Amino acid sequence: MPENHAVHQRYGLALLLLVVSCGPQLPPARRAIPPDQSTSFVIPTVLANGRVEVAIRTGYVIGTSAAIPVVVIASRGAVTGPVTARIVASGIGERGRPSEVLVATLAVTPVSAKAGQAMSTSVSWNGRDDRNDLVTADAYSLLMDFRLEDGSVTTTATAGATLQWNAP
Image (tube, rainbow, N blue to C red; front, side, top):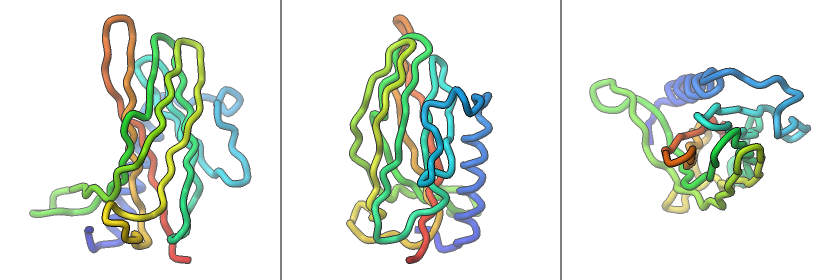
């Protein structure tokens, strides 16, 4: 994994800002996931035929698991997912170029929302990498892929969020 903690935080924050700024945000009254005491942010991702809302906390503690609520909403056609989910660490690779390292591949339980529907699921991460080692305190990117069906056209889209893991 990349060594520079400040670079991780900078790229994690940049990804979070990119995800939040990718399209118009809906007013709080129309959100499918209402923020509660255990949720600090609801991050919407606008899709070609709907949206995905991911609810995250301001931080997670190393050694614990995180269940991240995901709502899939279709405005037309169908949106299915997440069909894949992964955790990546971002940093600076060779020759100063940004790079991502796959940390963990997560199990998913996809849902399919048809036009006018909102379906809920969640993605869990135990804070361990694919070798079953606990991750270090840092910001990690959760990336989830969704299948978009609109008439005879099927495409994919990615929604994501930055998860901050802190020492106990």
